[in-house]
Image 1 (cartoon, rainbow, N blue to C red):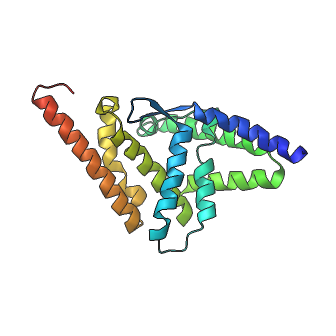
Image 2: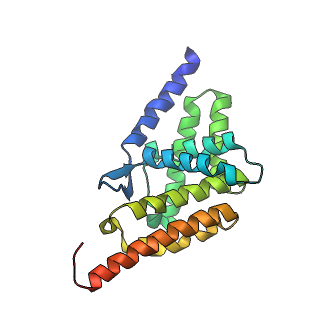
Image 3: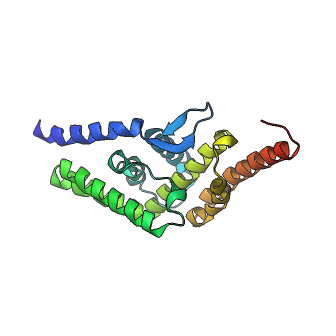
Length: 203
């Protein structure tokens, strides 16, 4: 019973991810939550697994995906473009997330807490195969969601970010294929919007 208290604490914290909003909108016009983003990243991992020929620790991959944004329940979601060209903001984000993970680890018993923190740190380091795959899918899902949202929700910087995905996927052909399809979708969306705009019509 005592062991469950820490688990319940983390679950209550995680509930906040259901209403922590990202800078992404859904195809129906509603803003996306962190929890919804995380869920589809996990689904992407399940769907691409049969096409990954290398040995892949699927359990580790899914664990990393499930917990990589858990810190945002406390540290809040910070859009990628906020830290893209701002080193100080990036350092603040990293510190806030590290503090949040320390707090989450403290909620659990020693071994489970250490494992959770180790998985989060592995994801952040992006050096192991599973961490690279998790990171790539995380970035690709974000762009996929932008593609599905109204172009009116896009910021100018997000047009540039379409072309910043390759460093995250170029280590594997399957992820590169997925990236190319998502980028092509984005380009078609932008082209359609720009042609309508230049013709003097409103969407």
